[in-house]
Image (cartoon, rainbow, N blue to C red; front, side):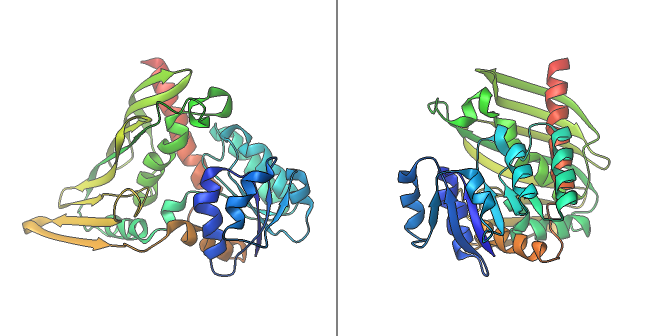
Length: 320
């Protein structure tokens, strides 16, 4: 499958473009950017890359079969729909939308065009999450009672970063709350019923700290998501007969080695590790398989459920 990228974002250059280049059956063929100088970092591993100065020109290219969109958050819906209408499969960075209702428009465009469109929620393609889902849903920790999650980093000094700008859809919950909420939903297979408490701190009209408590049908949930705290991440699933923890759930093998620790009754403790898996390559290969007719772990309907929980969190904070 021949891929094109809309925008020369740093994340695209550092992670997703190399992953497309490395994935089996994928070819990074084109990049659209208004700054040709930014293309040089992409050509370092894709010397045959065609560079265009116009997004629409890339979408009009009949050779391009799939498009990856790493544009600022407020542009995701617009360009995902444009790419679908141009007959391309679309993998769009998270959050694919800033309100759950906006995802309905993307779903409609996907269904009308018959192409695959998905949010780039790469963690569900990593074996640590498929293993955690299997263990939790098969009763390895007994009845699940509580899920606890932390995902933080500090970008206070990056005033020009799109995450710190309200006009580009910035904020910690849109950026990484997607992972904190979506990870719990994926592993358990449940949807949030109610956000019971949300404290959100804002700077320059973007959320920089959120402490969230919520109820799911079978368990309670607690999370801290922040762009103003020292980097930390984990997610833990606590049942009546065991406890399961992922210590590098979101930036696997970057923050730390991807590892799953299972503690069960009687002091039994086991650990599984995946030190070499690249979840971005796995995502591209899973996307291509789904575009050919297979199942996909993160369809738009799943992404909508996560965005609904984010919407509920902002609503709960306004009411408190």
